[in-house]
Image (cartoon, rainbow, N blue to C red; front, side):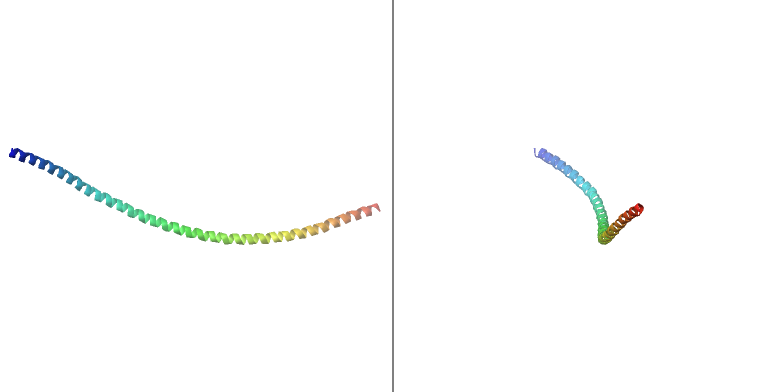
Length: 122
């Protein structure tokens, strides 16, 4: 009876040992592959950080350039508005002069037409 109990305990301990060994092997496999996976993941993340940093720097430079362009366009727009206002004032002045001269010419033409008609009558 004691011998059979020892044999059962030996079988149980052997089974537990095999189970432990199998778990240990799985753990070691995980450690070996897990470390490599983590290293690859870290390398990829570092590369992505460098790329993102470069992209950010490029975007900031582009933003500064666009801000400068916008400011320059704003100044150009103000100059264009001023030139347009000056041109409109000049055109209004010229239109007033034309209207005055046109009125005088029409008056003169009407007077000449009447005079010509009077001379023709005799």
